[in-house]
Length: 471
Image 1 (cartoon, one colour):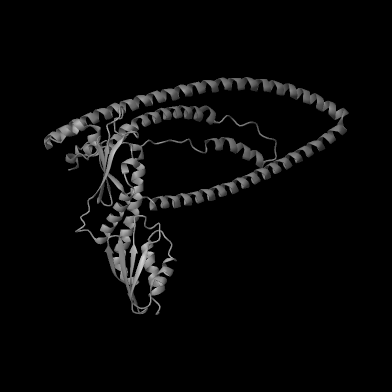
Image 2 (cartoon, helix red, strand yellow; image 1 turned 120 degrees about the vertical axis):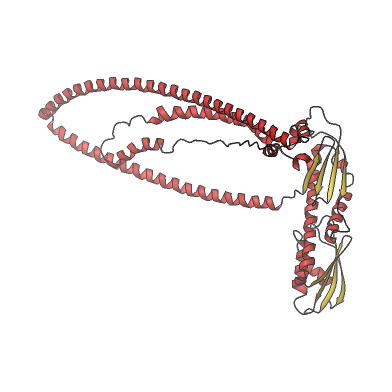
């Protein structure tokens, strides 16, 4: 039925033809978090636990020669893939658009086809999909070949660099060994010289060495204390950041609730063509027709903000004979607001001003819709508030209260307008039994702040303050 009416999307059209086009989401890979930690911090922890002289520098971790070159190549490949995905996203979004807007000629031809012709056309599309799937797999395979070729070339380059570095280290080790032999000879010479000539100085030198070792141990302890203190500060900052993040999440949640609560979008688009646009309000009971001027050159979709609007016409689609009185009241108040604004074409001369007009009307429709729900609530549950009858006359609501405990019966008439509930309501009181009059009602209404569910709160406060205790 949607296909015949022209409201079927491209994706639904494919589903109708049994052509399934899955769109996969990209998956991201991450470098292990403990790669650099295992290679850099293990030697430091060992050196801090022993008072011996610091060990020789640790060997070069594979991060420099293996992970980082691979990561750079993967990042370049990911950037290319991301760019390709961004270029293909508009084509994927076509599935959510109407088939009529994407290819009207195809829809006009296909809507006249029989079921057998549709199945044949779907089979041909599945063949094309199978062919393009194979082509995409071939392209992906070629891209993997290119990626692995780059990784192999990078690994070979790093292997060559490491090999040359190993050769240099071997040469340095040979030179160091020769230096150690020479130093050993010199040490033996000076040891013999000191043992015979400078023995008192040797004793002092030993004491200095002991003091140096003690100083090194003290410095190690101070360094550990400093690191522990820094770690404690970082943990404190981390806790504070977590608390701030939780607070921001709570604020975000409350803001989202407010946005959902005060969403005043009350209109729906039922038609948008080159000549006009049709919007519906309040359960399709009010229709707004916007007639556009001639299209502007270069505006393919007719959405240029500077395009002129010829007229804006409001029409009521409500059947007042069958509709409940509360719906008729809401309809009158909305059209009261529409007529009070004068010429709408002057307020909305171009397409640029149309969103503001829709917003202004939605605010009035939302407030009046809530008013209608309040009246329906009072008609159904008014007995809980000693409300015998709720009557509507034009834009006035008559509320008949009666309570035997308070020995009172009176009728309160409230005059409503389109700006409800942003202003106090004029009222009149007709007393039938008891002594409750305008002064008592005025005192109660003065304590009811304007705003959401204003009418319900008025009835509730009258019931609470005037109709419960005997007078």
